[in-house]
Length: 144
Image (tube, rainbow, N blue to C red; front, side, top):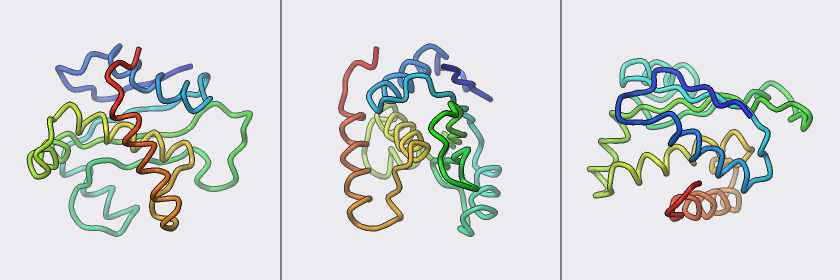
């Protein structure tokens, strides 16, 4: 398993991030999977959000599955990229009166779930399933 982290901000130890991702991958039976975590500022995230989702302004997380152009090949271990905008996560934490770390974990799990094929934008049933998974992983206290 390889979890690459780009532009990791201070205060986010690499090992903690890796453990969080490893926990969800193990629970979803994707223990050997690889992915990339990328941290961006608001301006760059807004550019990506406009380019790929045709939505103005930054979003908290974007996920780019490696297989977006075709069907998932179970033999391939690289899942794709999760891109997180920490300024937006901070804004959302304040807006929803949530602890920043809990909101960050929710966003991280949300992005990883997208890479695993969960999609809240593909109908009500899939949205409910993804939300339940996200809430479950976010509620866990220890991800070791």
